[in-house]
Image 1 (tube, rainbow, N blue to C red):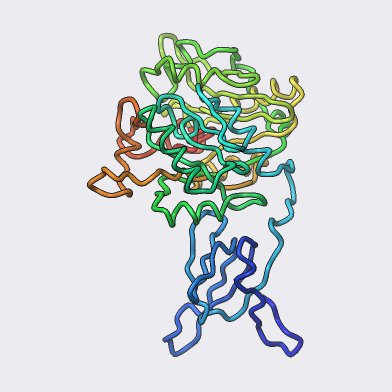
Image 2 (cartoon, rainbow, N blue to C red):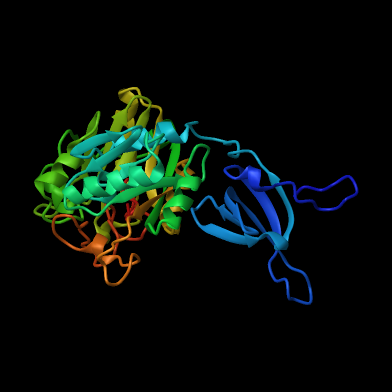
Length: 381
C-alpha cells in the first residue's frame, strides 16, 4: 500500500486511472467494533457514483465503495515472470486459436469471428484481440447477427490477468447483460523439461486421429466437424499408448506445433490406468517431436478449479499466463433469463454438446492428475 512520509496510508488513485492495474485496501466491515481490511489487486474497470469496480486476475469483479478506501495505488501492468517463456497476451491468444482451428472465420476489424457448427466454445466464439473498427454496441450487434445466421449462440472469448488482456471489455459485456459461463486458464512452460521426462518410448505418434485414438477420446460419436477441428493446425500430432488387445488405448494426447510454440490438448487416460504416469509419458513423447520441429515453448489449458492438474503441470515447469472466459449474449427470447446454461449444454446444431450433462465442454476427462482433465480443453472451454 502507498504510505506517506508521515507514515499514513494514502489513496493515490482517482477516476482517471480507469483501465490501469491497481492495488487497494478497504474497510471490509465498516460497522465492526474492530476495523478489518481487505486488499484487492486488479484492473480498475470503472469508478462511477462513488463506487469502484476492480476486475481481478481470475476475472471476478469486486465492487468497492469509495468511502471504504483506506489506501490505493497504481501498480505495474503485469508482474515480472520468474521462469518460463515470455509472451504477450496477443501473441499467445493467436497461437492458441491456431491450435484449435474453426471451420469458418470472418474478420470484424481486428476481431475474429469463429464458427464450427457448435463444436466447443473456442471454435464458436469471437476472439476480440484488437479493435473491431466499430463502436462496441455496433460490433456486438454484428456478432449476434453473424452467429444467429448460423443457428449458434453468440459468444465472446475474453481474457484477464496479464498485460494487454480485456478486463475493460469484460466489464462492458457484463453491463450489457452478457453472461460469463465458463473460465479456464492458459499455462505456459519451457518445452525441454517436459521432453526430458523419463518414459514415453511406448507412445505411438501419428499425423491423424485413427479409430483407436478416437475410441479413448471422451467425445463419443465424433462428427466430421469435430474431426476437422481436431486435425486442423500448423503441424498436428496425435499420441497413443496402446491398451490391452481388443481394448481402447491406455492413454492419448494431441499436440499442435507452430513456430516456437507447442500446444498440448486432449490428453486422456483409461480410468483404470490412472496415477501410473501415462499422461506424463504422452506429454514427453509429444514434446520430443515438437523439439525436433524447432519449438521451445509450450502452452496448455486447464480448469481454474482443478488442483490436481495444477500440481502436475507445476511439476512439469508450467505456470499460469492468463485466464480466459466465454461470455454468452443475453437471450431475449429465453424465458428463464440470460443465466440459463442449457443453451450451451444442449444437443443439436447451434448448441454445444455436453456429454457430461452439465454446461462443461470436456475435451479432457476425469479429475485425477493422470487424466489431465482440461489439457487443451480445460474441461469447460
